[in-house]
Image (tube, rainbow, N blue to C red; front, side):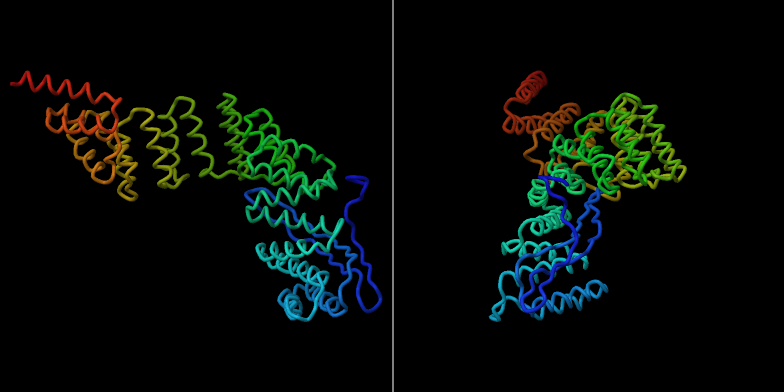
Length: 428
């Protein structure tokens, strides 16, 4: 027994002999749907209807089901489309609901989640299905909503099932996944922890991954280590389990151990160099050694363990900037801008020129950025004004600081304008 003294919905067929049919039954296990590294299992194990359907509809549903069992999905759907329940032939809500539900099963087997969701939703909205039949539909709708990113809808469908069967492990795991996607890690973790060691394998996997990610979001890094170790010991490894464990050790200040975890993941073939080296470099940079971080990536590229992508070039650029290696930063900027020029890179280059006191290079670049739409950015006018001052171009400096004073009255523009007036006076 489970839930409120009830067992989970079971399989069984109950048919009236002739005329109108009391129960139409479908038995399908609809495949697992992968979502963002987590698994959402949608099980449509049985339907037990107590609403009557016409003999014509029953015959069509029975024939359609036979085609479905033989995986002849187009033929199964064609049988139902010929019924045309929206016509004037007088189909009842019971007929329409059963047809819509069977279409949902076919669409789901055809990997058409939008159509399946619409069909199941129509079947549910006719208010024909009650009890477990309704709950199974809602659970299927929850899985399809989750697959399509309709997380709020998925939550409500799954919750309706859990209200009756609060210990049903697959639905607990899926609802925990939904809560995590809704940015509710505390609630997701609490629900995932209800899935115990006696639950089915898929539910334990889904719940384990939810726990891992929720704990990481909540910065419970010791728990992250424990959860990732459990997953790696009991399931086929995924790269992010290693990466999150390494990240947890890094956050705990154990950078050597973090590096060992990454190396172990690479050795076992679970983590690629493309995933591990950038992560290890980030650990080094955030630990206060950006130069070593950049050198780690350079060596991996030289050894052809990494491809020198734009993303890695930008990562190394950041490390050179953090380390104050302006010449290396400029060289990297030139490489990146040769293939993917952008305004944000030009602003970084402006800052590099300023750090190198290359005022005659700052002026044309600042003017270019202002002309290209940066006229309302006070920082560009300040850079132009200071560069003009440093290169003794007082007229340009006065113009730049006058514009700065209008854009940012609380800036140091007035102080610079006073200095310019003094210099003009002294030169007369």
